[in-house]
Length: 360
Image (tube, helix red, strand yellow):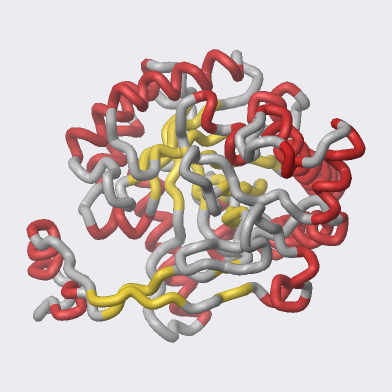
């Protein structure tokens, strides 16, 4: 049996639900999870009601937040054909239709959406090598971790989430930002970072390509510094609280390109768990190879959880495929399994799949 079985995401609350109704939904959802063998929940948000109900059933809760998550200029596609499902997308007839329909859209448009902190502090925005201050359509925004104020803001966000929810830990979900054609982050050309790199290496980052190994490693150092300070903040607040991270799975050389030097994070003892997220890739060969590599690097120092999506395009949405993926992950060195996310589990009728995964 897997040491733990994790489900990501909160329950589906009715629009405008009262506090008492949300509590009822929490109770029903937690009971369903418990009966399926789920041992841990990782919801977005900081609902104390959900934590309280889960603890009654012996289920841990570790709220998460996406990182970086300060907005950007995302594409919005208009008039999706799925808006016109006659019986509603949440009906059995609608679900059957969606399983067969290829969505069609009109658009796109792009509008700027920023967090309040990002709006108030444009001086902290991460910059690109070219068009440094511009957000092109489809691009996201990160704040520069070279600024102590940014790191303090991020640490406080996770500590507040832990305190409000009274959960068992928190998770940093690393999402991908703006990358060049080689898959390397475009960020890092802020004046402070450029000056600090030049002082250490005797050359400007503008004198080397964006994928220069030393330049990529240097930028990753700021993320490592943030995680050090986050761990200190979490442990100072609650020594028993766990800090975990989710990384989108990839080949070994790809992580440093997006400033994710996770082998060092493990070596420095910054993490209590690592989740490897198979988000838009359901290739079992990639799953086996990438899980095995992570397991070998970790070497049993912390638990490795294979996080299998049944939500994203290209994910494990066939029940037999999901079960096979779970077996491959465990056979490749994963200590436990995670499923992303709760809405997909519900809408795809995957609860029996979860129950089978709990007994692997």
